[in-house]
Length: 239
Image (cartoon, rainbow, N blue to C red; front, top):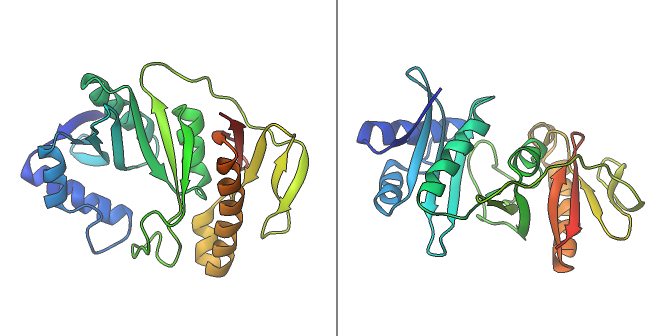
């Protein structure tokens, strides 16, 4: 697997088409013109190549505060982690101390990747971050997003989240949604929200609103999310 910064016109166009394919849309997720502007402004699109095949890509911006904002990332199975390491190396080469990005709080596999594998911490919950979305993955759902921050100067020890304590609310499937032991909070999300959306948009909306209620309340009280269990439980701790 090779990783390189893409700056040529055909390469940028190829990444724009790749993003559109992953998000199942005929319109641009990030157009070639936008990707070139990001590059010209000091950002970078990094591609992962398996021979001649584009196996993944990520695009980031260098911010005025010295951090890097990772706008988008997509990769086939097994490529995501080394791709993010390649982006980390690019960011560190610019002197960045941290990197941040957003993701859908209901996608448990992304939560586990971000919090456990990469050691990032969720610092913010934004309701309907993008407004209405019309791509094939998110169409019909609200675009709530969690913002995660990753320290590039060291590593955070990851741990398995094991929910405990009193059940404080119930999920749309009738099982516990949130627990607390008085100090920590655990919040459960579906194992596969993409499947839930396909089966029932209404049920997906109920999950969105239920999880939103737990996170918004917890963040207002000074919590951050630090881990995700294999069976879909976030762990939130006080800052």
